[in-house]
Image (tube, rainbow, N blue to C red):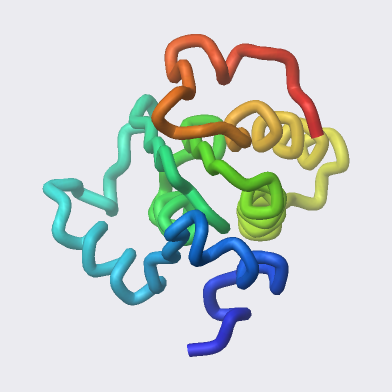
Length: 133
C-alpha cells in the first residue's frame, strides 16, 4: 500500500520513530465500523463521532460517508499536518455547489478537527475555543 493510500505527508516519515504514529488502513477501518452495533442505513442526526487520534482522517472519512453529519464529526490529532489533511479530505467528500454552505463546512471543520494532545485535550471545552488555522 502506498503512502497516498493513507493520505499522509512525507514529513511524517521523520517523526514516526519518535511518535509511534500509525495509520489504520481503510480496509481495517471499514471492518471495525461494520462490527459496531449500528444501523448505518438509518443514522439519527443527533449521533456524534469522535476520533481522539484522527491522523489524516481514515475513520472520520468513513463515518461521514456512512451518514454521520459533518457537524457531528470530531477529531483531534497531535500533528497539525494531519489535522490539515483530515480537514481537506472531509471537505472534499461533503462540499457542495453553494459557496455559503462550503464556507460553513470549512468553519465546522476548523472547529471540530483540532490539533492537540489526545491525553490532555479538554473534550468538554476545547472544541469551543477560538479557531486557529
